[in-house]
Length: 185
Image (cartoon, rainbow, N blue to C red; front, side, top):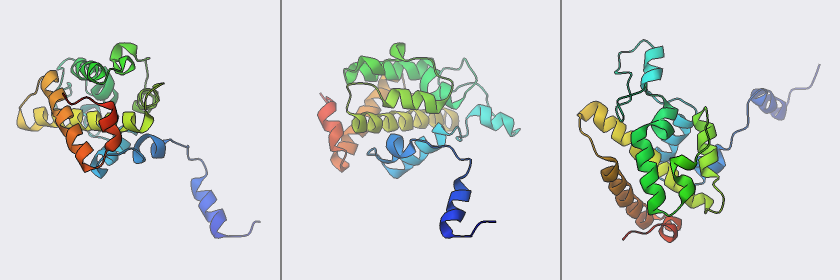
């Protein structure tokens, strides 16, 4: 029988947990706390998308409000939806980073896998890239909610304009690394 210590209790509590890169992927990026919290939840597949609502037996539209073609899941919402992919493609062109274009992405089965692959694109400033990912994910979620609860829609081009506008605000608020990578012309 072992001796009880604070350290042994702490280690027992962590027994069986899996290590994640949330600190590197989310918490060290520059973004408002609400955006980081949202990213932390969606990466763990814990946001109320229609697939999650259906498993609880809650009424919902089940179809993605952005593309209106496929069941909404967290992965679909961020990476597979044709509307979202247009936003990412336009963003890739804006920041001149071809690897952000969805046509360059490898197939993934979870939001965490997709987020890690995208956040670790070679030859890009990592903190800036991760900050931008938080912004885009947050704005996609906002657009999803606008369509769901207000029955209002923005085109992918208009959403990119909102992303650019918000990026400027983030730069003014302290996300200085964004300014060096983005062109606001």
